[in-house]
Image (cartoon, rainbow, N blue to C red):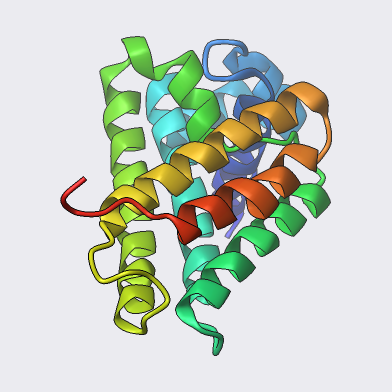
Length: 199
C-alpha cells in the first residue's frame, strides 16, 4: 500500500510541476521536495525523468479519458453531450486548484519537438481524444444534428486545435475567458459550418 501511495504521490506532484513549468523547466529535486519523497525512492519507481514524464502523461490521459467518456455517455443529444463536455472541462479547470492548462499542450510546446518518446506518447493521446470525439460526432451526424457529408475526424481535430489554443490563452491571461469564448463562438461556429469530406 505504501509503495503504491508513494508512486501516486509522485505522479500527482509531477503533474502539477509539468503543468506549471513543462518538462525541461523543472528538475527532479523540486518535485521530490514537493512530494516529500527521498531521491532513492524515486528511482525505485522510475528509471529516468523521461520515463517518469511518460507515466505522468499516462495517468493524465486515463483521468481525462474517464472524464470524457462520462460526459459522452449522458442522456442529451450527441451535440448536447459535446457542449456539456466542454462546459464541464471549463468548470473542472477552474475548480481544480492547479496551474491552468492542458498537459498535452504544455509538453507539446516545451518538449515534444526534441524528445521523440514524449512526442509519440502525446500523438497517441491526441489520436485517442480525436477518435472518441469523432465517434460522438458520428452519432450527431446520424441523428441529423450535423450535415450528412460532415468529416467528423476533421471536425474533431479542429475542435481540439481550438480548445488547445484557448488553453494557451488561459495560461497567459490567468482566467477562463478564453475558454468561454471558445464555447460561445468557436465551438458553435464549427458545429454550424463543419468541414465536409469533399472539402
